[in-house]
Image (cartoon, rainbow, N blue to C red; front, top):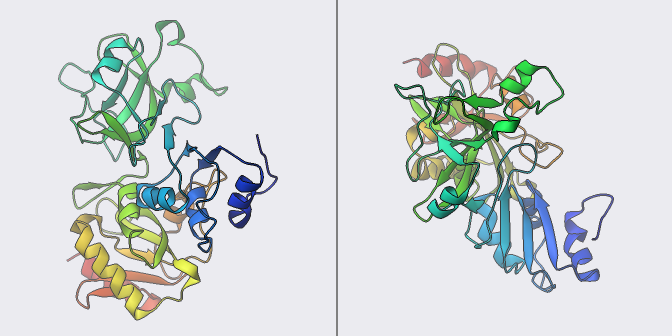
Length: 340
């Protein structure tokens, strides 16, 4: 095993070649950082046979695989606490594992994708008080069965109330107990699983559910965008949350009228109206957690008021077919329009 004191995108594959590494591990946005390094004829020259990790987003999956000549990517799900885990051993792009009917039948402790209320995070129940499994292609909240002997087990060192928040009882029958992962996944017709969003990151706008993870993937397909961190913000006088994206441009490009118009046209052409970000923010630094995952909590709290934010702000201007500057002066005009 090769360990390094500090991650360096520029030195990463140099070290891989130097130490004849055959398996690399990634987490969060690490692969995206590696793609920012200038291309080299040496990119695909190494002995790596597989990359293992979680958090590799679909928008850069194939790009990373092709550029660095990675034969197999094994994305997995469940890196921390929980009673279930999956891993993609089939090299299926974007998938974090597979759960076929045969595996379900053989599994003593079932895994389920069930309907959940996006606003509250609570599971949706049928007339009998039981959870409702989702259909193929439909996002669902992941639950993992807890063995009967452990159903009263304390998962966390906190009080019983803290533990109870992570449990869902009477899921399929009276008395059963499941662990609530708080993650939305979907399954395709071949039984491959795909991560969709954290239950708290998905938001509702104009009566529709918006998965921030999916919107980020769409926006990041635009050549000028390095990364798009999407989240929901509250607009006074309206229900739900409107989409907002913290954008980082490739190679620290300066914001221009053309770029703003390109983002507008890309969002309009590739996203339904309710999923298009109503606001853009261009922070100087990427907001990521210690595990290189996108950090949304602080961005949500800061909202979109120009008086509270130093970063350049823009709003979706359908009249002028671009993203226009959101300033203290235009803020009031925008709120008036948004309520019409």
